[in-house]
Image 1 (cartoon, rainbow, N blue to C red):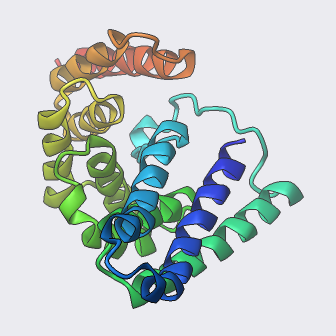
Image 2 (spheres, rainbow, N blue to C red):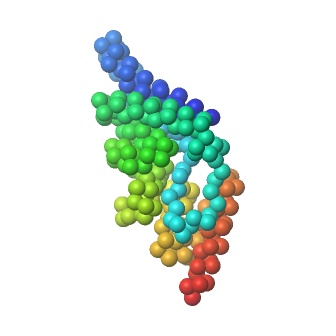
Image 3 (cartoon, one colour):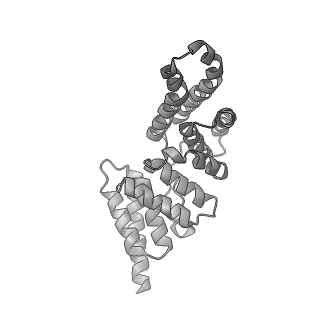
Length: 231
C-alpha cells in the first residue's frame, strides 16, 4: 500500500510539472491556480509521504545485533524488484521536471526521500541540499538527510550529519528517528550514558511500535553491558 500511495503522489507531482507550461497561457492572472498546481501539489505529496514513509536508520556494525524490522518482501523478490523499477522510473521523471523547473524545494524534498526509499542515498544528497529552504523546521527531512549522509560514508556520522540530528531535535526533542540517530552516534563514540538517555526517551513515546520499542530496549541493555565492561 505504501508503494502505491507514493507512486500515485509521484505521478501527480510529475504531472503538475508537465501540465503547467500547457495551462499557464490559459490561466492568465489566476496565480492562485498556478501556485496550487506547482507548489501545493508537491507539498501535499511530501506531507503525505511523511505519514506513510518509514525511516531507515543508519546503524554501525557494533549495533548490527539489534533486531531489524521485518520486510513484507525480501529484496530479491520479483514483486519487490518490479516495484523498485516502477518507483525508479517515476523518480527519474520527477528529477527531469525538477531540473527544468528547479525552484520547487518541496519537489526536491520528495525526490530526496524517494531516493532514500530506493536506497540511492548518494543521489539523495544533492536533492536534500536543494530542499534546504523547507528543511529547517522539518525534523523528518533533517533526520533523513543526516541518515543519508552516514549511509554514503560507511555508516559514519560526520560533523554535518551530527549537526543535522541536533537541529532536528531542537525542532522536536521527541522525534523518534532523530533520537535513534543521536543514540547511535553516542554509542559509537562510547558515550553510553547519552545513548541510554536517548533510547529511554524513545521508550516514552506514545503509541510506539513494538519493533522500535524492542530495538531501543535491547540497545539499552547492550549499552549498559558496554558501560560495565568499560569500568
